[in-house]
Image 1 (cartoon, rainbow, N blue to C red):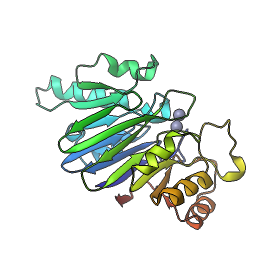
Image 2: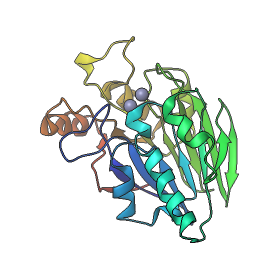
Image 3: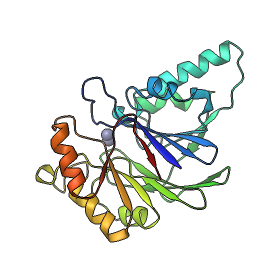
Image 4: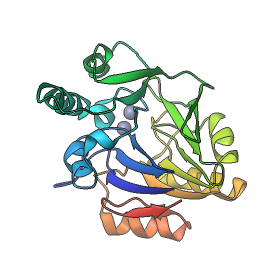
Length: 240
Ligand SMILES: [Zn+2]
Ligand SMILES: [Zn+2]
């Protein structure tokens, strides 16, 4: 498996950057993890979007779904041109928000309703979803190809599900929006110290995503690497 970071910031990007979106290649499958701002154009530079097998939306916040409608327009255009393509599975939780309404009735996706503990199998891969702690209903995804195990936490603060997620993973892409001094229990995201603690507890590597655009990049990189964590960078490919 490998993971390409397409957009790593949230809730909005730094200049010329994007918000949450990652391409996971597992087996012969291409899985898009969230579709934040800038996702479509960056993914298109790597693979034709019709080669996606699944789009996973962790939750409905715009920094994770901004480009969903653009993917839909693209597939609509392919369809009008009579170009055949296999529909992607779209795995999402329907919270009734405007950002998911665009895909709800789209004929260009095969919907999969996420719930806590839901399991999906596809082409030798297994997927598991767990509810995490965030103001919008948010789920993580865990992918196993029979050998390696990878999870993406989605947006979350500290919660019991993180033990489950880390216990099932070799590598975790985690929401590290806060430096420890800015974090509290009522914030919507984790701190990089909490990520470090889960990594050590479960012996899993962590990639820190959902970077805070207000932090200085060099300072953040130093803080992340000092804790033995990896920092998501746009265009960077991580071997899982
Ligand atoms: Zn977010
Ligand atoms: Zn969010």
